[in-house]
Length: 270
Image 1 (cartoon, rainbow, N blue to C red):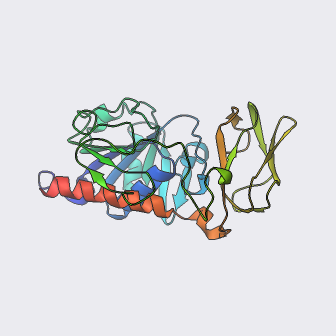
Image 2: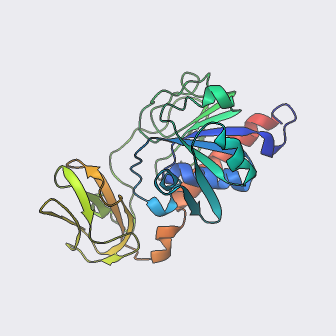
């Protein structure tokens, strides 16, 4: 495997540290791969309780028993690995790849377009969702659209196109998304894990109320003080109302992570 490397010797670089990237890294870290994540300086993760990007703000973030820690420099990465944690580096262009020379690079930004990942970045390059073409941008794509093919490994072609419609939960799609009504700075009045009623105010942007369209539990919400623009997704209400779901990795992220793990094992065991 990978030139007779053990799993804990295979270096994986993950671009992005949001919810889906965290789900992938959680599974890979549980399998003892050596992983480093990169993020921008001001992450905008919605599901913050299950996003390692929070380590950029708070220094560390733990999700279901796996901890990530902000790396202050490339040299700090090895110290974090020795401590049994996942380093998260502010490096939006993933320039650290030239230093780490990873065996695997995973683009988990979920930007719906390629933001600079190249098929030459590592011996195995994997892209999550639309925006990547197998053989041109990456070696493998993992399907991220909810439905029959979620988590499928794509060995030729591309993922399904972005529909722009959030996945259905208990019959709700766009209704469960909280969007900014105007541009400005978000002031939170409620937080992740809180129960809300339809039309209840969860925050303010200036003098304008930000309201939930449906009843449920707030599963995701931007950080207090975030700068937002009109129409921007800034929260997510789960109509099932199960509070524990706010603090655990989603079924979607777990399914996608399984596809990533399989793609890695298939490649290095061939």
